[in-house]
Picture 1: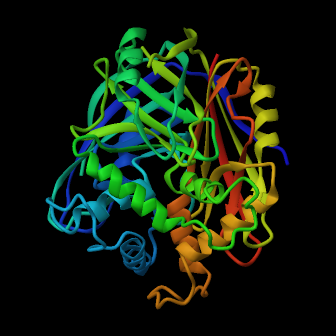
Picture 2: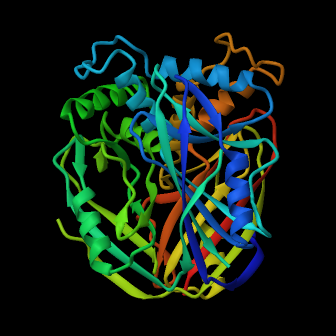
Picture 3: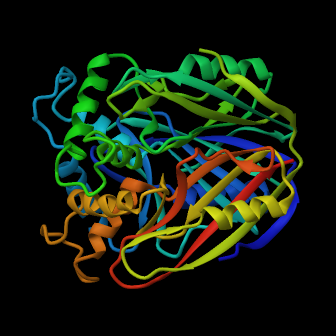
Amino acid sequence: MRIETLSDGEITRQASGRLGVETRGQGFIEITDAAARWVAGTGIRHGLVTIFCRHTSASLLIQENADPDVRRDLLTALDRLAPRNVGYIHSTEGPDDMPAHIRTVLSGVSLSIPVVEGRMTLGAWQGIYLAEHRDRPHRRELIFHLTGA
Amino acid sequence: MRIETLSDGEITRQASGRLGVETRGQGFIEITDAAARWVAGTGIRHGLVTIFCRHTSASLLIQENADPDVRRDLLTALDRLAPRNVGYIHSTEGPDDMPAHIRTVLSGVSLSIPVVEGRMTLGAWQGIYLAEHRDRPHRRELIFHLTGA
Amino acid sequence: MRIETLSDGEITRQASGRLGVETRGQGFIEITDAAARWVAGTGIRHGLVTIFCRHTSASLLIQENADPDVRRDLLTALDRLAPRNVGYIHSTEGPDDMPAHIRTVLSGVSLSIPVVEGRMTLGAWQGIYLAEHRDRPHRRELIFHLTGA
């Protein structure tokens, strides 16, 4: 088992960016294209892009972007893993609030993806999604960091 | 959907650090202030901070730092997701050991947060927590890495 | 609570690499040694290594590398968290497919580990694993990024 080196060179630059996303209640919003355009626009050819979600009831994840049924089943699965109305102490913000916090912990708020020859190294079926876990629409904010050369 | 660039410049420096944390059994210990002070002390204004937890039964997560009931409900949720006494093979280290490993996988051991204008870009309600998943007190160690300029 | 600085200096280099892994159905394949050899081979002494899994039904995680029973119990736990045959809409790729997507979301596809004095700062019991969540063997691909000096 041996790792094949793809590139080896200097690191000289970094950029950061912000993306506001208007959500429409529980569900997934794909941000892959926006991320790819921003990475390409910086001119950085090799490096690492990191995405960070600034919320405790919305998260970031990578999943299949082919069949939308995968995302529907994923919502059902998250609902089963972090159900409503199981006697939460923190309930003043509504029955969807504490499940949203738990789903955020389970799916995470930061992701890092290597960039090779100007493109994120996502697999053929991978899409990057902001996951909204609250019932009502929210304005969410993601921060991007890219370093490389 | 377009990412707005916040900063674009050179990358010149990196620093690493270590934080020892004494835990008192299952629960969350906030490390946000310690991380913020260390980032500020390096003088790095733009960059990326990464935190890594060197354990298999303690993890790192970001959650609401306002209402402590959120963390109490989160402990209950983790207990439901990874319960004790469901016939684990690995049980010699006690009934809390295998659930601790599972909770660590679910919540994760590495986090990366962009730094803009000298501050981590955490959202208004986000706190960074070391999560202890064992019953007894432990000395845990986190490694920090910061790169930028 | 104060973070002790371990190193502070310039950042000059980056490298990327690729690792193909042949899996044999559900289970964990340790990649710690391959990662350690690659990091050592670059000559980078201080920095950050990031590993990224290019799949939606295989993931990356860090767990105990001492007792193999921990991994057996972990498989059982993932099976309980994301069971088969609970009425998934997306079922054309087999009963193991949707559970594999869910397990990938729960365990994650990117990991970042600081490097200090030429070594990843893994804890004494930590091993890095590719987790295959499908029943049949697959060829999986991981991308590595290392930056530092």
